[in-house]
Length: 131
Image (cartoon, rainbow, N blue to C red; front, side, top):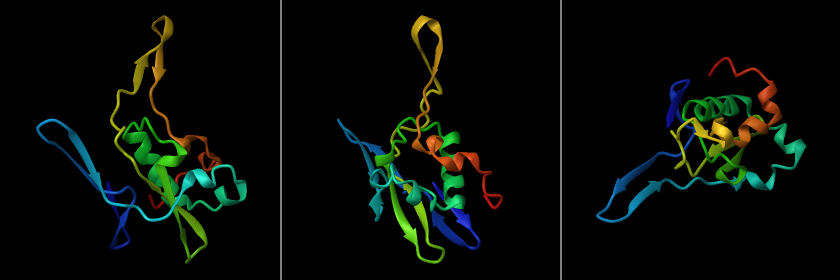
């Protein structure tokens, strides 16, 4: 998924392709440089530095794509030297467009979307208006 931003292309999630060989399905994606988000998930001071515009884009993408496997170690981060914020990069995007609900116990529906983004304090902020 690629989004354009102010006359330049900005990658929010790495582009990937999937294809079927004769026996094994394969997902190929570009390497994302950075550090694993899992290493700072329990550091509140670092989490406050998350870039709200990037967070807003990822939040909307995760919401619309029905991400089922958005755990902390499926994100990389880099630092933006222009404003000292942390930019998140979603990786390992093979569990998307899953059914939104599963049949749970006693016939109740169980929500099938999981993303660490939904647990961060930035969820209390408004989506960046430029997004």
